[in-house]
Length: 401
Image (cartoon, one colour):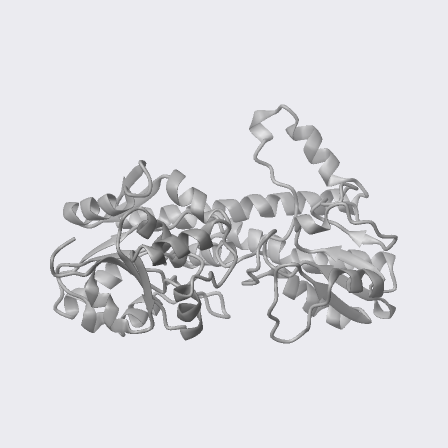
């Protein structure tokens, strides 16, 4: 660390699911880290040693690095000036028309621009629209700064951050050899495997990764619908075709493909290809259409308009409290129109903006039909005499609706 800086790393937007685990991990591996986040509530909790969201294994490490004096957090943008490495955890958003905003990151950085210096390395960490790295470089040059820029995309799965930050290879890209070397040196404190790419290659590599997963889930969901429409159990078919057959082992089971990344990144790639990405758009139609498909199938069997439907799970993935882009909420909106009533429960989600979630026992008692929307382990072994739509096959009874 240069004598000019009192911190090794500042993480802009570091109070969230991507930035905070990274900041904690870097601090635990010897970097002096400060988190900058505009959320006073998040910063207060972090400084008290509390994680603002569920991430297994993170909170004890947070408390340790705080006690060691290797970690701090602030809502004051001026802390950006104190660190040699500036990690930006701000992604490219997609608007209501599914158009990405490439200027979102440069705009967000304007608040911090007065605190940047030539000696710093600016590392873009979240998924960005192709060309955003170059755009950030131009904005810095227009501001008279020669700050080096690197794009080093995060590759972790939520709830596995404190494992995968240390085990997965890290993609590192920069326009200059010194920028790449500096970024590699930082991330080498976490992992032994560094993969060198050019910035534009790295931007596409990140988008390709998430889109490939989204397409695989869409294929599984489409196969499920095909089998289900013929009264056949897709899970039984899937187990049969994947049994000791390596070329099919990556076929996932059906279920809601949601969360803050997969859908958004697929739409970014579609925009990048001038909306000629038919495969991506088809995957979106399949995955986003699954909640409606489930409700339509239930309507064929039951008098939904006179029944109460209970949704089991509101977060976007099992074992998580993260509701961002969760299809459980799309399912609930559809059911509010088609069913007599809809109620929900989740063992991890505690905050609701509109509907109040009920305890599981209350949902099991009040609902006429149940839908397993999120495959939380708490629902395994569930005993009920109510009809259950279980597209995940969490209860092990097949996935025919």
